[in-house]
Image 1: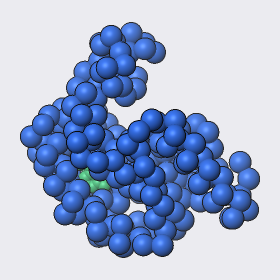
Image 2: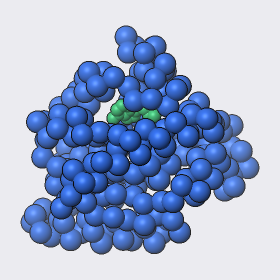
Image 3: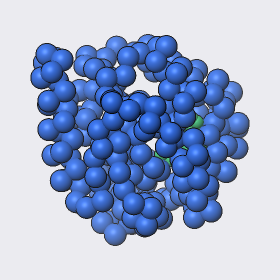
Image 4: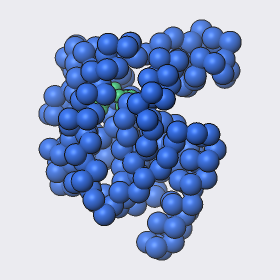
Length: 211
Ligand code: ADP
């Protein structure tokens, strides 16, 4: 079973994907993480990816598809969680040529909460864990490394990312239509997690898959 996570930047896609990977064994593919890895590893795509990310723009399709396809080749016991892909209708059509999409979870959060969460988001440069500044003393709770801000979590870039979402990504709600399941993530994380769990358990029951 393959699941797409849809939602604005900072809606919590990465956190839910991590939960679904740990709890059910899905293979988590985050195109944002793949982009950042290409920058860190200074690959042939690194420079061009960085140029786009630093402006809050989408990375060119051929590059994203190349990254995605090599991840999709990997073995998965239960299926993929796609986090950050597709981000527009062209990408959705490309995805459907490669794998079936069984469900699209739309993580819904109002803009004012998004901004607060993104501007307070800090990441561990060592183990890549994600935190809200308010819940830490500025250091990673796992490895003690000093947390940093993601380079594109700057107000001007975030505003651009939100505009890209409205123009390019939001039309996917209509595109995926009957496959969309909306999850409100504006209050406590636990509430949204138990809702997601209920949804996935039901989907697995329907498809007869065991985990
Ligand atoms: P967020 O969802 O918070 O914007 P991501 O880590 O998913 O964070 O993405 C960060 C950046 O990586 C995007 O702004 C974009 O530049 C690039 N990116 C990620 N996924 C894609 C994609 N599917 N297509 C094009 N660019 C992408």
